[in-house]
Length: 224
Image (cartoon, rainbow, N blue to C red; front, side, top):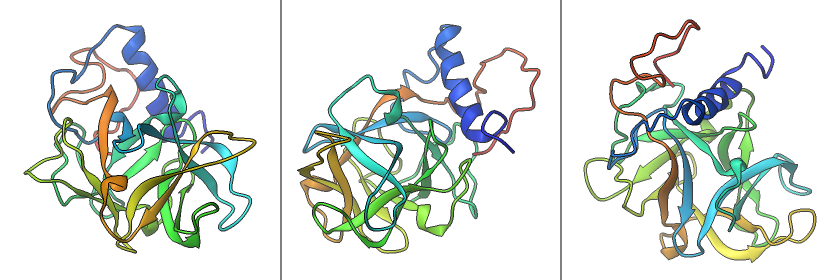
């Protein structure tokens, strides 16, 4: 399977299609759902979770994950998906305590962590890993929030399922070739540095396909 037939390309195609046909799926939803494509803002440092086809020069050498201040960058979109062992239906609200994967839309790699040291702070490295949305168990993150479901207005935490570390930003900045971007890493203790909020994106309504009531001639997966 190549990029142009794989799930990451289809996800990106759906996302572009929403805007081309003027749909506003899920804009009134107050919660985050499976299959949604979102940007995630670190509340403390005002940067959005970001990735790109630039690899770390140390540690794992995998695709880097950073934080950026730019609002419009398409490399900051992530697809909310179930895990390989627990798929979730498109449009299903994400429950507090649920374990998910976050797949970088433009590259098809999953938010990932492991015991390599991060390049600037020497905390736990966070990378993007896998191909076409498929990686391994180190791509799994548990959503920590205060109610029944992940509310869009709520600041939540993402705990790495295998290492118990929290997705965090503490402000360290990279030089070239990604000058000014912030290091994203994982840390063991909760703090203001590990709070994230769902921002811009396409939020899938429960029970609704990406094309609303329109027929779609291409086979369309109903689970992520």
